[in-house]
Length: 68
Image (tube, rainbow, N blue to C red; front, side, top):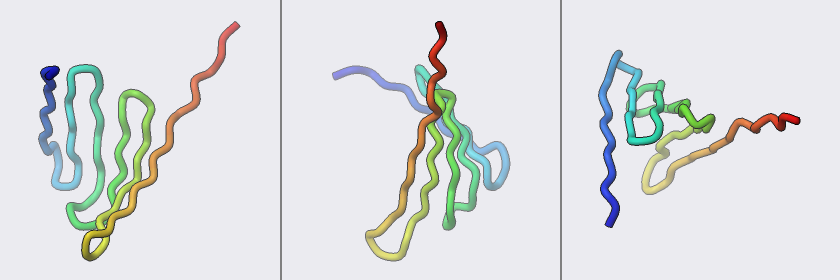
């Protein structure tokens, strides 16, 4: 079983910073509303908890430019 590390802390009431071994991310949004997450790897996620067992999540990744 590999070891993992993750630390999360709030910098403002609606802004949270998440640190991992290989990347970091910033989540912006209220605790009970829509949230937007920006990752150092280029991933962008929009998520929202809906009533009951439902939730919404949409993830997009930044395309890498080809050089050469």
